[in-house]
Image (cartoon, rainbow, N blue to C red; front, side, top):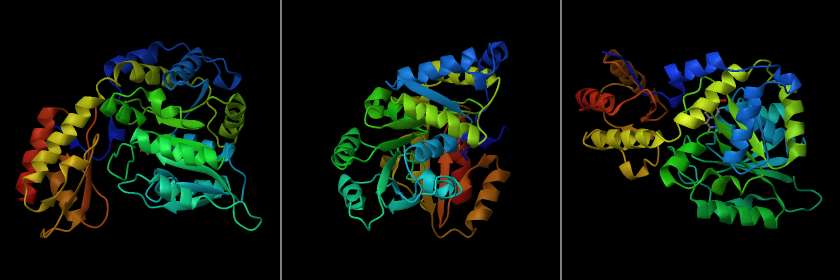
Length: 344
Ligand SMILES: *Cc1c(COP(=O)(O)O)cnc(C)c1O
């Protein structure tokens, strides 16, 4: 039986079609701006998000960190949700590389309320630290793939504009929100000075993210810091071709992942030891708790692995399962049987 890998949607492998597109890619030296495939991907991403320019970078972490670096000064502060990727999974880069302090706001399943953001913006007196940037994450990974309601974003934007603070969207998983709501990506992106999107999550490219903005001065600044951070690549068109293929072929199918996540959630809900609210499964991430089991969380992960199902324990009695391109509805049914046997 093949392994069912639900640890993350980053585990997806390039499909045959994607590999063919990569093999055929026209390339050039992107440090000279001469890679036609990178240029095409950047134009495509900017167009999709309704912005003027995009910069291709190796990872989502780099895209977020460039956004922070180009919109802040050392000693300033960035407002961000307390379980955000920028807080948890970027090795303190905002402090280490941009010299800024992160101001955490604890949201509800990752979503900050406009009033919370407003209260977190510092006064402009001579002794308070200055708020330089507000970062939102859509969908919110650790919140459980939560979709930011557009109305909430609009209200946060109004607060930010009134206080003249720019906004960055960590949109690594933005296309999941787009697939679930059927809102155009630009309807989210219009509220942010910078947006990062990731090609290697549910979209299935082997690597790559984009930083997108309307501000050509910001893009040139980002290009310089990308070089400083070691992210300027040469014949990167090989990777960009995978990104173009992903945007053309894999955005439309994300709803399948969401359906599979709901399917898994309903199966888990039937197991008495499991606590889960299927209504909290907005997209492709399923977070659930297991209580009163004889096995510890790591032992449970091991036992599932013996039966061919991989998931992550995320602390306490919580677990995370993520659906993606390489997991079919039939595989979800099989995983459901394994969960029922081991947790029942
Ligand atoms: C995956 C992810 C990133 C970027 O991760 P990398 O591993 O650096 O590509 C950023 N933000 C969110 C919300 C993510 O899910």
